[in-house]
Image (tube, rainbow, N blue to C red; front, side, top):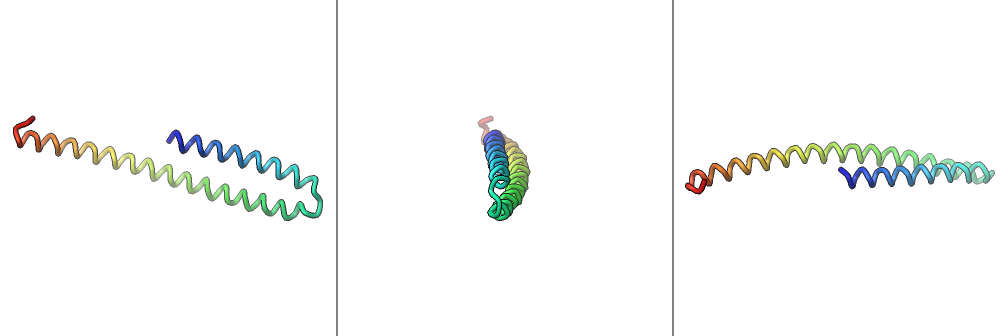
Length: 89
């Protein structure tokens, strides 16, 4: 999970910076600030959607890692049984 966590941290930090700067710009803009505020809100919703998706992918990855471990154990056992049956123990 190291790479995924690092990417998520960079993504979150970048969005935080963007939100802060967009808020500062919106405060100084006047008439166009309503459109900018809508865009910031859209980005926030997209951020939440992506964070939810990342969480789901992390859970799926953990589940797959568990399955991979089970398969590895079973394969090791099967190989040992085959070797024993062939007399190569």
